Length: 453
Image (cartoon, rainbow, N blue to C red):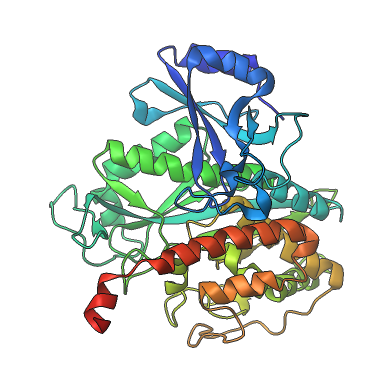
């Protein structure tokens, strides 16, 4: 589970000019935080970890603590130990050869146990529940993002990227445009090369609907933890590599009003003990089991919305007729539904695509919530209803939380997800995000002055 000196030695043999290692921890909000260590100190870290404030995994998006459940101020703000995870040492391509990194998991300083609120542990525990059914999840994540200028607009917003060829600012998207992929080829190649140098299994890159918007797909993994690791680290790699090329990147869900938003899509199938995909319609129960899985996702969606859409901006994505899910519907090869069944030529590749989450959501918690919904549906043999065959996105489902405060309230009333995340973790998450929302609402916007002064 934890990295060894052999892994460090191999990294340094391949990259002898590395001077420092970034010990990365992923916090509740999905951000990469941690500390930078001189390379000579890393061997010591491998034995027991390096001290990091234990409550740092419980801060809000600004890095502030709300002292949730007494973790932070109330308990004296003790350190935990960040332990390097096996197989995650990698170079930092945008560091000029001087930097390396390793992903870490937070453990107690007293006994080495993983903290119960570590996002990787939440996902690991839910994954074990699915495996308890004799099933192995196969997971892949897709992330959408915008390339932007390094500078900001007068109002603090992002500035669309300028074409490397024409120098003109992007003003409209050209979905699936190969010409745009060529136009941005050097920067997109740099992003992919940085990801691959870090062992991130990127595959397809496509041009999305928004101006300067792209999507990077990650290959399927038989370990959901690895799939979530890849997504968490990809965001850092893409941003770091883009800045080295003179661009910036945002995974903000709705950075531009009126333009396409950024999503985090999860593709999921389940294998039995013999390696057979239980969703394969060739098996007698295949279509029925797929339906049960979707039924569980439908049943848990309202409780999980605060995890899929973790801030006030994400809810700007949920507009009618924008290819963003606004209902609980499922369907074959239909991008207007929440739970899409992509077309496949081989039934053994049958899978479902969960399309709800915003791109900045915590990939561990999102994946855990998806697996929890699937487990709940399978164990309770839920009926998902008929597949939607038309436009499911014409109007919002008013039974779903369509604002962040409604989503937090729904999370506070959760009855299903408590069996998967634990009541304490859901309460802790809600406290952190509620404090974040309260702080956000304390700021008076320019528009508020324009309208009401």
